[in-house]
Image (cartoon, rainbow, N blue to C red):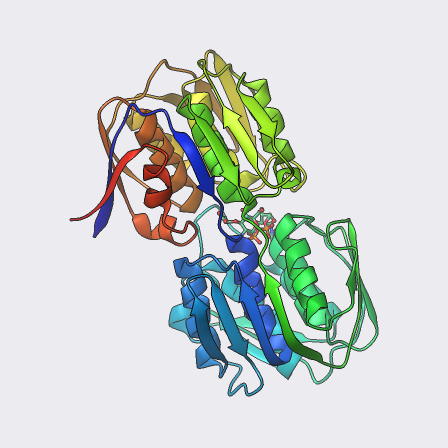
Length: 420
Ligand code: EPZ
């Protein structure tokens, strides 16, 4: 088992280049199954969820060639089956995109119930609602989801819940469906726009991604024969912006889209730190005083992202005063606060709210990552704490951050990955 050993008390300074977005890449990879052709994808983050997805695509008959550390060529002309391997699909949540993609391409899909971070119930009723509206039948039994359709036909779908996954899955299933599909009350995250842009580059006809309503004119075939570059990771960029604030450092975050970071930028200014949008693709964040208290409410994009809530929790844990976080997306996204309290924080989680009574400093301790973003938060906490922190359960962190300890070390952090 590996752990990160961090000696704290560092102010992070320097530059970091952001990788491609995890939540775009692990939707674009299954989306390639809709293509009867070959495509190239650049700026792919080299993370374990991506490598796991490549393994799944190969078991389905795709031919995958890594052209470099972050570029993949995918040939999906000869798919051999529509049953995704259970042991692999249960590793993470995004495996449910195989349902929309295989339904769209082959009219049938068998996928194990998705895994992923334990953040609450995380049902898939809206995914199923979309598939059934398009003419599919969906059965869930023995831990598997079986979806099939003799023919997918366009429909008008109103999402009861704003859901990133269901929005993308509905798009995947509708791209080759006959007619014009309207999906209303959709999620608007940058990675949804990226998946729509990818599909359109490959021959689809999707309009309105990033707004409340997406319109899809079904096409006969996606030909591929194109190259697409994955959008920079809004959440990775935000993680480093927050690390600059928490450590009273000064970081230039390169290769990001500052427009996607506006909800975080506004909160960073509110706690008294500074932000300079260099040119829309690079942003500088610095802080030279103890953060002020602030209240935070997570919302679907363009609200404050739930995936940056644990990281911002570290800033509020050391802020001057009492802050409240209201987590409206997931029922159980405060497990990390127990770990921060081991480091001297005084946080009281109460259901979907948590009260942060700011303390002047944290003290290093052995802590356990409970999910991907909690892990990132604990690394930031270790970097700013007095003494040594050991972060365990790195498998969560490695799912979504490429070379995270190298990136933090290049900013001055004293951090090493050690095998137990
Ligand atoms: C995606 O999860 C991301 N994962 C999550 O990122 C992110 O936190 C989340 O979107 C919200 O932005 C991937 O993209 C792989 P949702 P997803 O469907 O699609 C409820 C990370 O750290 N809901 O938008 O599962 C659901 O319970 C991960 O990168 C239903 O009720 O999120 C939740 O309360 C963690 N029925 C809310 O909607 C459904 O059918 C939002 O979930 C689907 C969702």
